[in-house]
Image 1 (cartoon, rainbow, N blue to C red):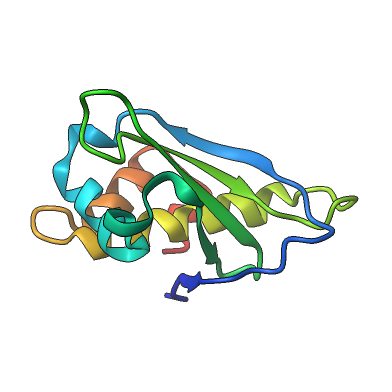
Image 2: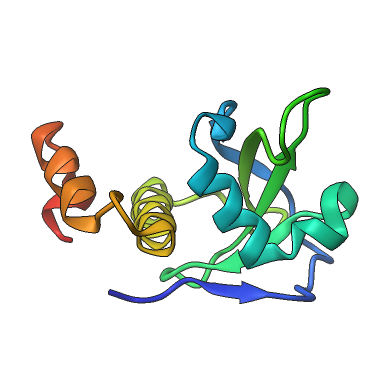
Amino acid sequence: MTTIQIIENPVLQGSRRALVLTEDRVGHYAEFQEFFVRQFSLDTGGLSRPGYVRAPSGMTYALVFIGRSGEPFPDGIEIYALPDALEPLNDADVDADLWALLRWMVAGVGGEWRIEDLDATGRLYQLSVAADA
């Protein structure tokens, strides 16, 4: 499995944001909130900036964390691909990258959350990216 790389200061000039995934209730599972807080130092930076990662395709993604009044932070997440401004997205690459991001998250959370279970669910839903995992 190619790992996801956290990028501290990505070069954003000449890129655009393309929304590729939204999860509006990360807060349902405290383990995922804690994972994002650890990985992106959200306890000190909070809403000040997205978390940036480089996925196996080489594409950079911005993870925008959402807060809601009265809820532990982050309560949601939006994931944006950051392709060159005029380049179209390659859907197959984005799907594979999102699957790699999910596997990275599940591996990072650990405990009851297992990559094998994620992969089995993906195969159950006949996701082509899960067949390759």
